[in-house]
Length: 77
Length: 238
Image 1 (spheres, rainbow over the protein chains, first blue to last red):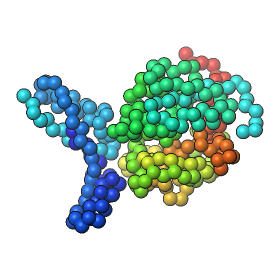
Image 2 (cartoon, chains in turn brown, cyan):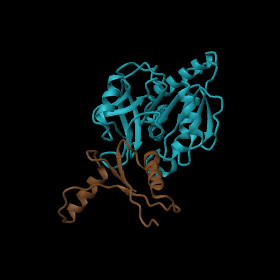
Image 3 (cartoon, chains in turn brown, red):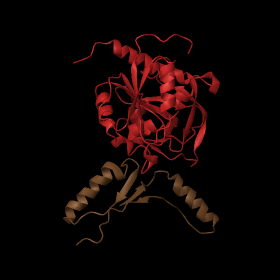
């Protein structure tokens, strides 16, 4: 799961990283900092797992008010 | 705090989560203001017989994931939710405010300070509502000098929520002058629609003794003690 500050929400961490990257001489236009959550789940029906992950994001892993999330399933079946 | 505490003493639970660190100061302050503080460990399922609950400051669960996000799942929080739904008084200070937002007892979210630095200093806040159980000792528009100490105190509400908060006068405290953390509309503390749940970033429990500079925190915690005492006098509703 990739959890990120929603577009339009000020991301002070991203701004700090942006400033530091520029200081190092990199031409960067914008930086946003999110977090990756890796979960291992037993084998299950793909749709069911996807739905479970959605619920995890909504209930705990992301704060829907300020963060968006993306889910990627890898290594299934 | 020279006035003798009036009887009876209301009982106020102060909840300790792993990583709370202002629970001791909160209990000292409440005791000095005439309440009987009751320490409650986060793993308890039931609250003892109390008239109010304080969620103190600190770094519950190391602020992992998001400040307050894990603490809101502590066993005791179900009882806190029930007490709040029943009209009981709940005050969240700093990390306690973050927990109340994550628990959905208060709207909005608290994010990293715009400065990205931890802020630890006295600030001036303005009382926007003097008619809540947490500010009844204050005057409308009164300025209080109370310390803040947080890294994630930037209150965020999207434009819709902000408009709703303002329209329903649920902003209880606002930073005077520049906000120390970038909070939207300078918000330092808000209440729920019913007015029995409040969260604030400044620490009234650190400002009740002249030794540390200000006793303005007593206006807030003293209000809570008064309101809790009053609810003690009311016959229990069935």
